[in-house]
Length: 384
Ligand code: GLA
Image (cartoon, rainbow, N blue to C red; front, side, top):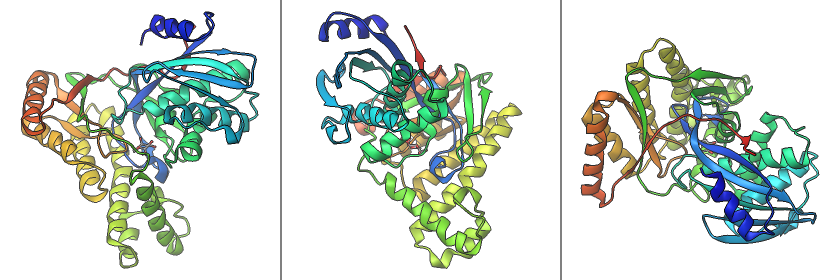
């Protein structure tokens, strides 16, 4: 992301002066999908693509915001009733409100922002936007008194209260806490986390974007979460120690099967398996056993596609191509309903796989998937 580009637009659209520049990344997730809101484990990392914003307090009680990519300008006040209509501006407004709720004396500011994390690719462009502003407002108006855990929760609460997606904490956590070269194993219940240096010898991580726009607002994402919560309730009635599906076992699930809607049963079966898979993948990584990592990635994909039902035809197709090419691991990534597959590929297979995926996807869907080599980057920061 280019600092001069953002700065030149900020200067052009406001009074010619400059402010401070902040940035936050999008994320990938190696494994642990739809486990975060079930209090389970996830294994994301920040990427070297994200959102960059220039911000300057303007001495008023109004936010004047310019989206460089959308070429759209919006003004809004800072009270609850001032919510803007533009969907991109709701994220900034939500972050302002959530910071105010946490005691930060947010005042009016001018801002312009741009991003290079592809929108709707399942790489958490929205979390990158939220983290950028949470971090910036904390710095500009809050003496940095809100800690990083709470900054991640500000982004999540923005999704819940101002966007309408009842997401877990993974995306915002990865965006705020990202560290170059490392994945993060996060326990979404305790928020304990550990950095795992990720430098697989002889393998590459690559994303293939189906270019089917993934959009969680208005999608069945919230329904999936409700399914999980229903099953956890039923199990809890028999096993009070089960607070969420993270605590449940396959045996407990089988015991209550007759009381569940078949689809709720399938959703829970996937989640219980996925919680275990994340831990298995951590062990495999520590042992340098990438074959097992890859095998688990495929298992996750089949679970997400058949039991959790959040994949789509194009994602399934790209995973099939990966299987045909002998790729070590491949799966859909993120919330689903579009976006990218994440692929663990032996270096010597990389070129052949990419060419084959492009060719076959073009033949079938009349367009090529976009290819992003994964570079694991740093989390939220002030640039200057
Ligand atoms: C989206 C949500 C996350 C998480 C993933 C699925 O990215 O924002 O909280 O639930 O989907 O793992």
